[in-house]
Length: 306
Picture 1 (cartoon, rainbow, N blue to C red):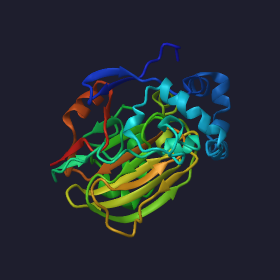
Picture 2 (cartoon, rainbow, N blue to C red):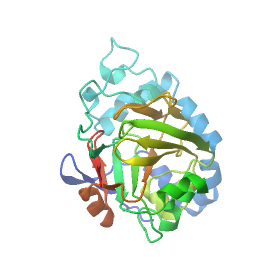
Picture 3 (tube, one colour):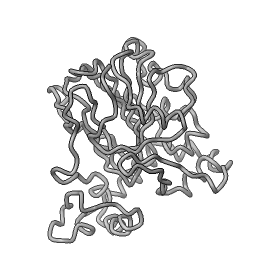
């Protein structure tokens, strides 16, 4: 891949196309675009390496990276809650990089759409959306890799989602890394599928088109009030030391409630739906057809009930 590879994103909030600034882009290019890097791929994608790196982000020393990171990526840090060192300015209030990484929004910074027929964005992320999962999907990976049965890893459970709508929400290291419930409902089943921890960066996906079905992921089958059954799939990625469930899944959930979070690294949430129950937002569908992800803020509308 040439050095000129750019990731273009349509930013719905700002109504413009942005160029994504990639954290660790040199490493991604080496790992997936360089022949030597590809030989070392199994080591780079190993859980042990990601967990070791993730653990290093818990150290007090790692907290020193936070202020330069905020400046470099122009993060609107005033929207977030402070870390453990509450007496410090917010840039130096986080005791580790991981504490900063899983920072929470301040009260009132994000709100979920209140209309019952509108699905709220379950992650603040870059979205692709498709009206139905079929074998001719080409964005962002070959369609055969987006079949419900492959993503969910259980043929019986996947039957409900064949031919249904699909959204892929990609989180970057610069993003808010907590994910939420898109509607009211209850959890029917939840399980983890072991796997690798490849990068989910679009450059990596161009070289490895099986990432979503080979990476470690956690699947929750949700029964929602307004959108039918959903398969909510959290996909691990390089340097994601852990996928954490912060909600008690034995209880009913409310729209907008926090479901969990990813510790250090970029990652992805995939949402599969039942055929005919809902469709992703029009702008997302249009941008997806043009090969563009749509950047959408937490709680904003991502889909409409049919």
